[in-house]
Image (cartoon, rainbow, N blue to C red):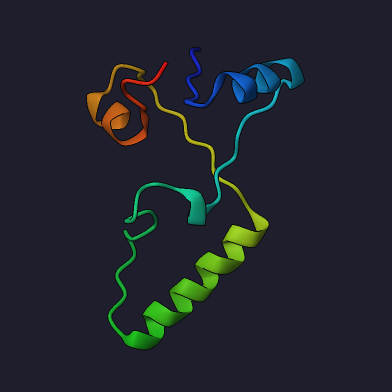
Length: 84
C-alpha cells in the first residue's frame, strides 16, 4: 500500500515519527461540493443539512483511500503541484 499526504516537511516528519494519519474536518476540505450528493429540495432540508454538517465537523474527521494511486482526477483535486 502507498500513502500520500501533501503537507510541509515539518508536519510530514512529525506524522511519520508519531505514526499518525491526518483527519480532515468537513469545514477544512477544499472541495466545496463535499457531501452534496444529498438531494435537498426545501430550504428547511438545506438548513437541517448544514446543521448536521456542523455537528459532524465537531465530532468526526475524514480520511480517504483509493484502490488505485494513479488517478489523475484524484490528484487534480487533492494533490499540490509545483511545491517543494
